[in-house]
Structures are given as structure tokens and as C-alpha cells.
Image (tube, rainbow, N blue to C red; front, top):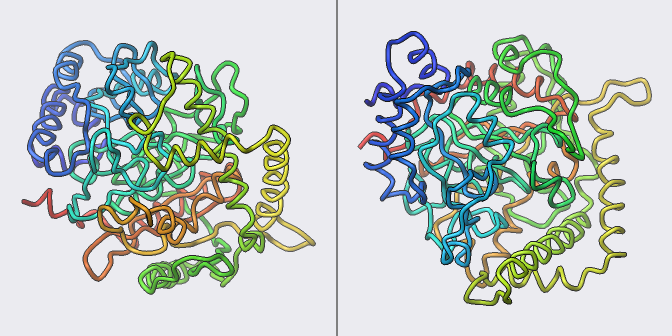
Length: 480
């Protein structure tokens, strides 16, 4: 069983396709691992073990991941007839189940994945630690006193604990990259419009949210992106179709890239952590040894701290609308017994945002995004930058509870310095597990590409995976 669980999704799929293992065996191993370790990490909150065993024993779609076990984050990626609580107490209390499959769920199914359960997420996914009142805290397999990150922390914990090789995740301000960083995984946030939110949602948070996955290898990330990408009828945004499948970028020569380096908050208020600087410095040294040009440089617009307040207004307005939707569905008001205090505060901010102010905020964000993206593009006859390298998070994973309570919001602003900007601009960005803290905790390094250039990020990520391999680094929980 251990040998099966150590494999990535690509290798598991190959074993099944060649008859060296069955889907029943692989899915059974994943369920057994979940039953062994999940009590310690609280990653899977809604089990689908019986359903998964039945599906694995039946006729599965002949997709590239036929028979490979998967977990779905319990926020988005709805499954008809299955619970969908979005980290909330009120949906959990009424036993809410989803009325239909999302398009993304359908794509995972066509690829042959077998879902074994849904994973923990903070309420509405609005924070960067997974500690909801509804289901309790998810805990980091590297050290269970520490956060898994958020909002895809349950999925990240499940993958880091070798329950499954792939976990569904989504990202509105860092929620793929931050859990990947804190759990020692690969986490790529795709470009805006790369993955459909349909059929129920066109966009959220001004188009800043996007679905993807967390994995242990770059090739899995690329191959999964291939199966979940693409236009669906009525999507308000769609990213250009890549020149070739992303999986073919793995191992391809990235060429000599021009890479900008940012290892500190600059003009933004926040933590300037020595370990974060060290993580970027080590990556820079390796990048130069691989032949890339590395410069201390970053988009000047990153120093415009005004974006944070404006983005908060947009998220708050959306939070208010979401809560109002559920109130209408339930036929009653939702209060402190239903909604966590942070989201009630966001709702109050959202109520104060007029339609005129909302449009103004969105217009400013569009203008700011253009100023940001210019840094990657050729201008004045000179070559733009190919990639920006930053810490994923301003410091090592925090302890459970540090991002909760009266000081939680302040602490979040101190460490959430490098990710949300690229949700606003819609650019692709990936966190890679290239550094471990002095306490042995994973710390990701982020690489941001020009709009729609996931291909460059995957080539570079695969190159770094070979040069700075993380495969032998396994969470202590797995080794017990």
C-alpha cells in the first residue's frame, strides 16, 4: 500500500492502465490511508468511501486518470446529491446537498478520477487558514500544531499525507498557492478564464477566483490542468487555448529566462521574514546556475498599497451578496449563530459599498492591472520580464489559532503580501516547495508568469523540480 501511495497520479494511472494494479486496489489504498491518518489532520470532512469503492469496481471512463483517487474541496466543484457546506455551520446543520454537478466535477469524472471525499475549507473560503467553526481545524502533516494554509487547506493536507496524489483546490487570493506552500506541494493558480465556474457561477470576486489543484509533482499539475481547462457554454471569460497540451511542457527547455526577484514587502506594510528572504535567495542562486538572468526587480505597481483596500471592498460586496442569497434560500436572516464573526464584519463592509463605489473599485482595479502586467511585456524596444519570483507567504506556516480571533485579521495582512495581486490581474502563478524552515516546515517560492503563460511556468517548474528535488521530503505523519 505504501508503494502505491508514494506514487503520483500519473504513475498510479499508468499502473492501472497496464493492469499492474487495479482501480479497486489503488482507491482502497487511499481510503485505508485516510482511515489511518485523517483523524490526526482533519482533512477529509465528508467521506465518500463506499461510493468510491463501488465506482472503482465498476466501469470507469477511459480518461488519462482512470481509477486514480481524488479529493474535492468542499467549496465549489459541487456533486449532485452530495453534501456541499462551504465551511458553513448553517448549510451543515440543514444537511444541504448539491442539486447538480459543476462542469469541473464533470471534467474530473471524464478524466477517470474517483472521488473519495470532500475536504475542509474555511467558511466561504475567505481566509488563509483552514479552521472553520463548522468542522474544526485541519492540521499540517509536517507538524500538527501548525496551519495547513487556506482556503484549500484540507485538500493540501490530504495530498501531503499521501492519502491522494491530487486534491481539487481553488484560489481567490492565494488559496491554492498558500496551502501548497505550507504543506510542501506544487500549487498552480491558472490564468483567469482557464477553468470554468459553470454552470451556476460566471465569476466571483471580480473574476479573481479560479479552480485548480494541489499535487506532489509538476507533471501531475500539468496533466490535471489539461483535463480541467477549456471553455464551457456561456463563460464570461475564457483563456486562449494553449499551443499544445501542458503535459508536453514538462521537461521542455524553458530557454534563458529574464526573471525578476522580490524578497521583501517593499513599500507594503507586512512581515519581512528572514526565512522568506532565504527561500528566494536559494531559488535565485539555482536559477542563475541554470542559465537564467536574475535581477532584483518587480512591477512598480506592486507598491501601490491602495489595491488592498479596494479589493477588500469588492470581496466584501460579494460576501454580502452571498449571505443574502442564502438568506433568501432559507427564508430567514443569518446571524452570529450561523456566520463567523469575520464574515459578518465583511458583510457589514459590503453593505456600505454602493453600486457606484463598486463600479469605481472595479475600474480602478482594471487600470492597476494594466500597470502591473506592463512589467512582463516588451516595451520601448526592450524585452519584458518572463517571470517574477517571490516568497509565497511572508514567513513559515503559522501555528493553529494565530490567524483566528481578534488579531487574526491583522496577522493575515502581515503575511498575505505576494499572492492576491495576481488574482486581481488574472495571471498564472505557481508555488513550488523549494525551501524548508529551520523548524522543518515547508515554505514555497512563487513564480508568476505573463498572462496566459502557464507553459513557461510549467517548463521552469519542471526544471527546478529536477535541480532542487523535493520528492524525498515526506511529511513526518506519513513516515510514522
